[in-house]
Length: 167
Ligand SMILES: NC(=O)c1ccc[n+]([C@@H]2O[C@H](COP(=O)([O-])OP(=O)(O)OC[C@H]3O[C@@H](n4cnc5c(N)ncnc54)[C@H](OP(=O)(O)O)[C@@H]3O)[C@@H](O)[C@H]2O)c1
Image 1 (tube, rainbow, N blue to C red):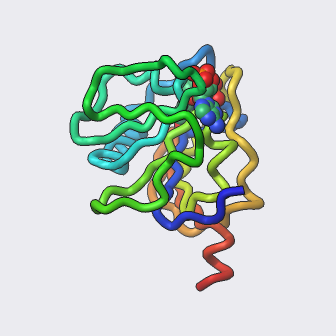
Image 2: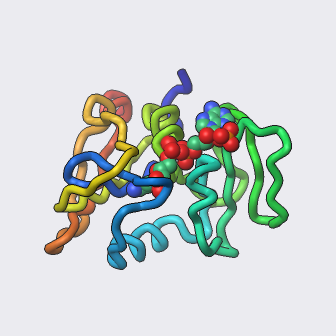
Image 3: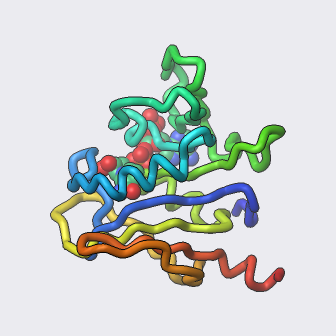
């Protein structure tokens, strides 16, 4: 297992019933949450699975996208996109000030959450029909702060329990 990595942050939005996706898309459209996601990840390094990458309509030209795939011939012609074939190729630190944001989907969360120092989780107050669920995370993270709440969502910041032990 990859150990805790200080520069890795996870971000996700999960429905009340644990759903994060349906038919390779996100089954809700909540602008407040989309703006939150964009504000946190703009200009950073975003790590995404190939399936999630293919759902992104507009890439932020300030950001760097690392796309995980096992397909050796997968190619995207864009200077801000790098294809990687293994979790071990996600950088653990960077020479710049960029943070590394783990942005899903499920397969990528499953393999990296334990190593993320913080999880920024939006919970949507409604249940949605879906086929993809967020992995169990409460054994890994402890709630640190509530950042935002309105009628539709709650945004919370969770801290990796391994960090609690160190500090
Ligand atoms: N609500 C949210 O916050 C949120 C965030 C992100 C995504 N989503 C949703 O989640 C769903 C997609 O999740 P998903 O789990 O189906 O797909 P995914 O994690 O986005 O992508 C899976 C793909 O990543 C590649 N991959 C996975 N592990 C790898 C490894 N160790 N090494 C190399 N490549 C690896 C494989 O690509 P190849 O098949 O090309 O080999 C695999 O098929 C969609 O519905 C999406 O909308 C929701």
